[in-house]
Image 1 (tube, rainbow, N blue to C red):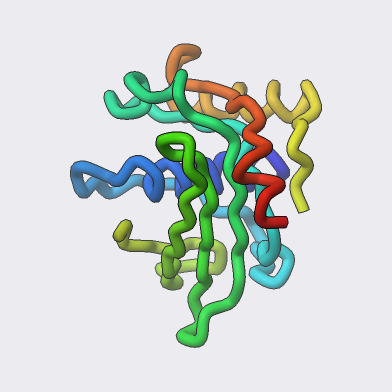
Image 2: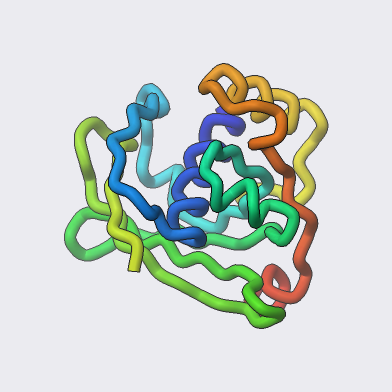
Length: 152
């Protein structure tokens, strides 16, 4: 279950950090019996998987980032990401709007541990491969203390 949540967050963050260059409909399975209140809080992006050219070009320069998920007034979620960009911490907030079954959100781009266990990495990698990602499209990000700890 943690691997599914991590992949979902990774996909959201990848879109938020890299900007989606094309509009594409992607079918992503949602967590059965999703409970929004259990999804709220602080998250750390530990790994990403993508087959985009942007990702392949930039993956060596990516670092772990922190996200905070909070309820929004309109029933959606505010997703605030803090990440390292050009040696500076940047923060962006996205509004995730409900889009279908519970746990499914859409957005327009404008308490997880920071050190995943080997088994979590293995599950994430297996899940990403099952979704069609190749080994060179999966990366686990190095720790970035500057942006992670500076705002805690």
